[in-house]
Image 1: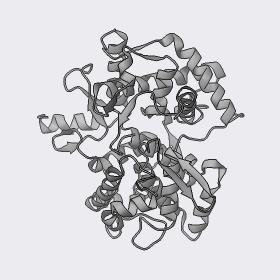
Image 2: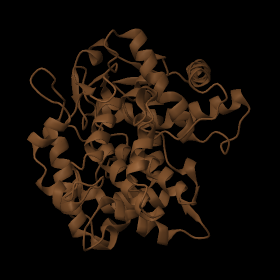
Image 3: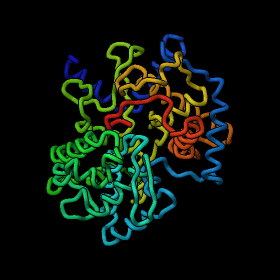
Image 4: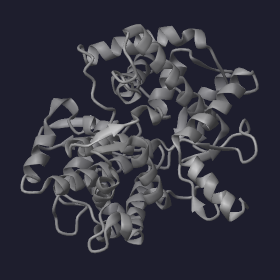
Length: 408
């Protein structure tokens, strides 16, 4: 897309902001509600019913409503196994900043491997004899690989550029227990993502260090960015989008800059760009806890948006907040760039904000007491999985997405 350099710089900065996500998704939402979409309609009278369902799930999962953040750290303790104690033991001799860097390494690698696993794949954890699928399976698999030093040149629980660049698809498949009987969607794409991460780490020494470039060295940069022991959540997202934008394959570009999780939709005037940054925001949420462990206060939590992925989007479809205008929509598989998926995701972003407001009103809680990141955890993601399992035997999302292992 040909845009003058000064304009391009401003557009790129805008498209990397949570403000742009809400504004552009809002344009799609308005367009759909004006009856202009051939694919979907919205029924906001269902908000109360959806909020009640989410609250029921929240009370079941967290009876006292003391809900942690929606982040990768929840999945590392899948099935109630205290795996993080194992990691903390391994990191016991490190300084607080070094521990945080290792946890950054783990979270970044694990989130980048966290695209949809498909219905068939399972991970068998030898230590516990547990069999785990989907996001929890990927979390535990990547956790065990990390603790074994798979992503490190020196076999430590770390990740570094040199090892990531040489990681092979065969090695990754072995660690994730992938074979013909246990297929994983997008294994090639996941491996390429980690290899590309290794290259990006070397190309940005100011963010990732020059002697031994690691994803976790971002913690040093963020520590220096903090003021009075405070750090804005949007600052973390901005840094992730700046530092990791080049890892995403085959995406839209402006002035040679990779936009990442940004797609196009006819409801948006001029350039048509609709940003989501789903994995980057999921990663941001997952990096906040190691920063809090360092004693930093995270401000502006609700600046970030809800995550436009198939559990949250499925909740809206399965409970009638979003309705499909033709039945065939459920019988096809769509690319992430398709108008159907872009529209579904955009509606999800806006509806998650509205669900959050309704949930808080019903519980008599403020945004400070119950920020969006906790409602997602409590919450909409879990509720989306629950209703999917009730309606479809495999628990799959209502609309099928052709994943390349790098978006969902």
